[in-house]
Length: 450
Ligand code: ADP
Ligand code: MG
Image (cartoon, rainbow, N blue to C red; front, side, top):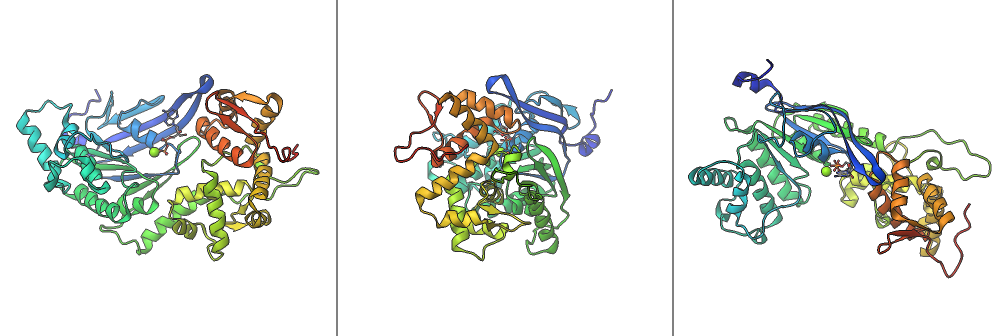
């Protein structure tokens, strides 16, 4: 009854659509990690949709559901108005890594995109030729991937995606491994390609954590909120192409997205009421997730703040350290839950303790770090376990993490906690026996917490 057959109808129906989609992954101990919650998202003909969100928020999972690479746990996936069964043959995906076959030439690598199509040789050659031409690889037919720069390799990836003449082109962080100029060049070409009328390509769906990239390219920007992934903010972007990043509307959109992510990740909480005899910690009372950043990056942030006192705002810091905004904010968040910095509005500044920390020598730093880590509730739980049993199976620890932080990837949180714990001298993991233990410190017994 509700079959859609006419081209006119297909032209207005979403190219791809998620309806009330949830996705959970099975994790250690028979539990589930809920990654997506009730996602409603449609990519309409002619649209360029950008999906933004911090690392781990579920962007790639949304893309995989939308293209049929994975099945949602519940909800429906539609393609051109019809329930999607299996992979969406109208869609192609370009991933970040240059997943090219090193033993195949450019031409052969592009042809891989047609592997599942029943085409005769001549049709195949023509399609490959067209895609190679379209994406500016004309003199590289016979070249091997190792002979190409990163930018050229990513071009091959895009050509491979376009060779099947998809209606929907999906990109997952496709430009993030490229240098600035190469990335910009490819972005412009992709916009031109999508805007060229009278070819098969109708819509683009792009996953990125680069805010400027989203505002530069997309007609609609969707910000995913994490834990579990939800549609947070949707912004229409009507700016004409080519877009000028100095345009007030461009800057307004960037600012809204920045502020949304900043207040989401670094909320200005009311001060906590001190409890007699206990150190004050915002993280003690709440079960905070552990930002997945190495200790070295936290130390790097602190030393930059120390060396460059005029850098106080999170956007300037992000520019200065050359990380994407999302990564910067994760590093700042880590320093914040350790109470080494505070973040009123979009400012980042040292706390008293943070100042003492940067001024301290290596050993004193570790002591402060240990005290701060000890205050974090999830560490508290794991360290209490270690205190009781001395040695605990890693799986047990991962399990406890998954119970305490149900929306975080427990394996990744575990790895980060071990890295922080190792720096602090509080805990370590033996990779051979997969056991977590309290390292011995010959010089002095552990800091006497408790
Ligand atoms: P993003 O693309 O926004 O960085 P992802 O969609 O890749 O996020 O991942 C979202 C969450 O789901 C993360 O916590 C990630 O660790 C977890 N995850 C992704 N794939 C799997 C999987 N196959 N098994 C278990 N957890 C997964
Ligand atoms: Mg991803």
